[in-house]
Image 1 (tube, rainbow, N blue to C red):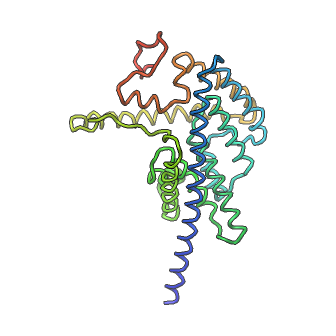
Image 2: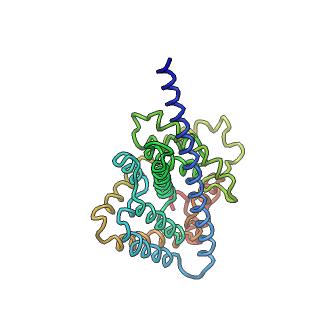
Image 3: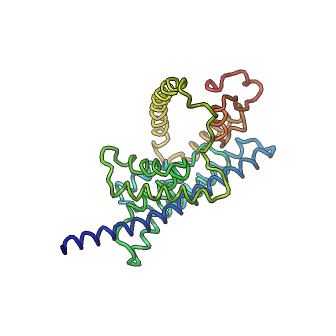
Length: 314
């Protein structure tokens, strides 16, 4: 009976700590996504209203990141998801605050200047780092035991959940990318809880979810089920090809990461922004608009020369 009481109390202790970590990480993750979403919206409107070409904005953003923040922490220049995985698996969820700060600042600058970069990986990595740091503070005060690994996972799941408006999917993603064949309950439960908290909190912010859009009426009719199935399978294979291509390009940029980083950022930003400026300036930082146009069967606004080209070709 005493053993059962001890086990019960231990389980309650774990549950209490998980709840504290999940709520804290949910708040951090939702605020992080809200901040990045806000600056993307505001900066896009401002930059597109000026006469300064978009490539000049992106070049300036790349130079600021390379000359300042990547000098402060060279490891902050890597991808967000691999950095998160490495921190959890190799360092038990402990991250350098300098790297976390530099990743946050560089991401903000990149998004503000419409540079070639996304929100998911960096927002998740920063959220994981801040959540882990908060857990470390609580450990020093004696409020909880070693739980920085769990806090880091909850930070990533919170950001993913807020971005995709997916309470369960966000939690599964944060755990699945660590070890697909052996997802542990002690990781999965707090991750899903944190993701759910983040989705709930994010809905209170005065902005739309960055990847939320309404599907047209009638899209799920029975006659469309087979085409949807075929399209889904095709998209899965195309996604696999994309990840292989992305890994290849990333490996090129990772070689000699600390050497010629400014040149790599300059060339990458110039190429990406020039292509966007050539086809349609409104595509810069506007993934949601492109998705909405495709689902509605509309053509995303392109410059007149390319207006006759099919959108997938462009």
